[in-house]
Image (tube, rainbow, N blue to C red; front, side, top):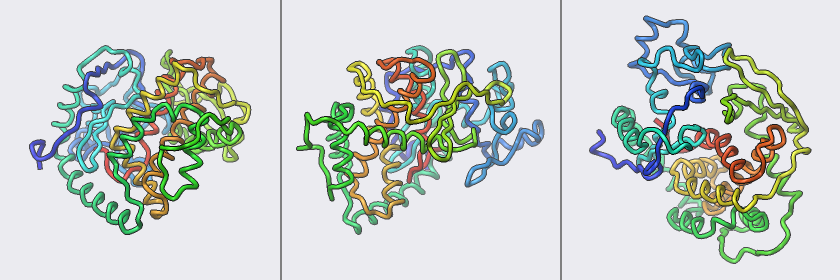
Length: 375
């Protein structure tokens, strides 16, 4: 199977540009897999820098400084093996998702995709797809079987919904996901209704702020609750600092650390999570959020992540409930992260603050479990 045998959706990258900003190094914090055809070079030239990853399914990867920092080949924020860097380094910030089709998605945690400068993203993505053709062909065959089985399970359990209609309904109700009253109603319906719809939900009532804040802290803390810096979200700020936030096991305290170029994490501050209130979105921040929800709504990997959750929960929830519920919790996670960034770093609460929260969040979104595959 080759590029000629499968369609590739480039809609996420159409009209976009991407550059590699000086002094960033964000992509070098993602431990890259070293493909079989790349291993000989490292075994012959850098054997100590080729290691097994500490993931659930180990793979050969490049070593990290002190086992937790940036790639060992990154010095002064420049790659020492740029011409021989692995394929996964070359692909960043593009992600090739294989589900029912092949779709290229753009990682919005990369600050270089927000500047409007650099190379044409559509052209770069096409080159990356061509280089990954062999891996894509294999993944297309495997993902097709996984999706067929998933749909059979959904139909047998009576939880199947029309994906196109789900996406269309979200597109028609984007503002409902940024209004806290509507968001409360969506989340309640997702939990209580057998098969929910966005039509006819109550409007104008006061939001349950206590419940929303508790849910927001719980969702955000879940992705940060670890003592392993490799497993927590990293936020590259406007001054190119690598910030990590870790929540203790009880979920009661969040620590802010900055990871330096040598792999050491320096404590910058800590705070009880319940001292960080959930701040409502300003109109301009709400518009940025709506734009991001629209992006997620068209990402195949987001739908695949919802499918993974349905499978994990043994097909108890209707697909509509799972989809709207996942979007709602995403909004809460983003809002709390924006509040946390402002609490520690004073980023504000407007459109720029929401953009920073998305930069903080999107890497985690793309790393979420899915029934498809990134190649």
